[in-house]
Image (cartoon, rainbow, N blue to C red; front, side):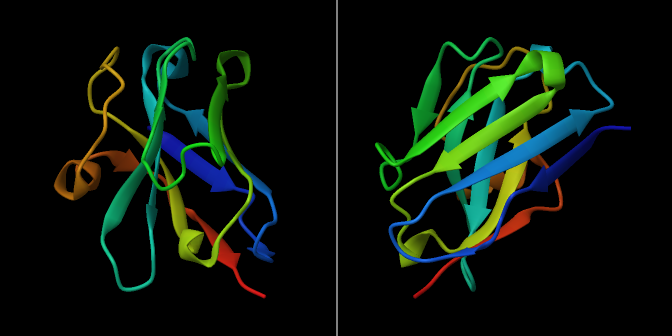
Length: 129
């Protein structure tokens, strides 16, 4: 059974940092492009970042470029998202997400495409003073 378990979310002040983790099981993690998506209160899913199977290619949505860093450790079946210079607009539930097919290209997803990704239960990030 495919399982994605996120952790690391917390309440943090604006300008602060967090590191999210996602432990994967039930599939060959190193064969899949991985993503982070988020959902702000009352809004739809927003794709945040993606990383290729070996971690050599990464993409980010415009609102997080230069502040967030996606990475992976295939030996540990773990995906990470480093969040720096956090803003109140970064508040939301953050999900680790996977495409249905292995070896897919890293791409930018719109909201409806993000809905079709396989996601974990999520971890809550709240940015507030």
